[in-house]
Amino acid sequence: MTGYLLESHFLVTNPSAKRRPAQAGKFDAVPMLDLSRQYHQVREEVLRAVERVCASQHFILGEEVAALEKEIAAFTEAGHAVACASGTDALWLALLAAGVQPGDAVVTTAFSFFASASAIVRIGARPVFVDIDPQSFNLDPADLAFKLKAHGSRVKAILPVHLYGQCADMDGIGALASQFDVPVLEDAAQAIGATWNKQRAGSIGLAAAFSFYPTKNLSAYGDAGLVSTRNPEWAERMRKLRNHGSPERYLHTEVGWNCRMDAMQAAVLRVKLPYVEQWNQKRQERAVVYDRLLEQSGLVQRGSCFPTNDAPVVLPHISAHAHHVFHQYVLRVNRRDELRAFLEERRISTEVYYPIPLHLQPCFEYLGYRVGDLPGSELAAKQVLALPMFAELTTDEQNWVIENIAEFYQ
Image 1: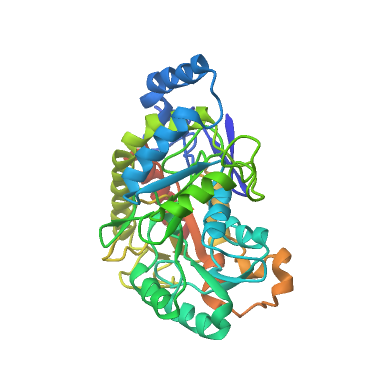
Image 2: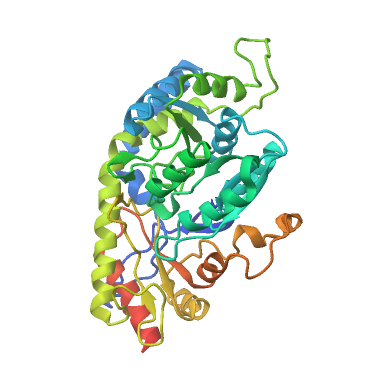
């Protein structure tokens, strides 16, 4: 087996997870993600791209990275793109470009991967955590309004996260950003190809951070990230910041960092980018299959936000304004940890994104948050469960997953 570190967890791809011929409908295993299936589709193109980079002997930035930046700037319709070493670095660059300084406050969601907050702290700023909308799991505009009023002029940026592949409520967030004159920076790490009111993630705020970690919908063969922006001056500054604050060799106009993208990752991403819409569509189709199977199982009640004994599963909610690309397919469920253990016994992989909300992480104790301060995020952390989701997942595998969930709740 090949192991991939998934944020703070290990995700295992299992190319040998095949149907047992003697037991129809049963599998040796169903993985959360199997990148080997995608690799079979793009292998020859990837190998040619890698050979192109090796032959060029130009391994950091260069023509491959510049070409990728142009292609993703066009894809996101943002106008400008700056490639970097990771999604975490992309967040850091976007915050710096927006002028965030030590001592400033940045408002973000409490229910996200750690990097959404750690990038703020890395600058010396203070994260202000906002609770979530219970249906979408994204930042709640009502609580955002309350936090903006409470923290006033100290807030220098709003950082919504497009969680699981669905854009946050950018209408509500945008209206508040205009009212309080604060820039919006999108954490679009999980949302390449997603839209809000037909506007691409990455072009809605003044800048957006993307991650191309191997598990993402558009994935590199290592760490890589990118910032898209509508501001050409921001783009120019971020290009300096990613390269030690250097606009030209051995001249440093400010102290930056070494967070450049390498050409090999750019070449791989350029191969995969033309496929991402197709792969996103397949993820959406698999989400529809999951919805149908769960409804047929009798485990769900449409319109419910929270699981009950009679309807222990709540389906993902899709906003009428959103084009959801299903980086993850995430349910709310009763007895989450018991269900997960049951599925693990059947070698069905699941994950919890995320078991500890950011405001309760030990490293943020100094911020003064306590249990009960953000109840929506805290409840979600106890109920969410992500099922296997990738473009090459088969309907038979999905049937097997839902059959076992139904058996657990019998």
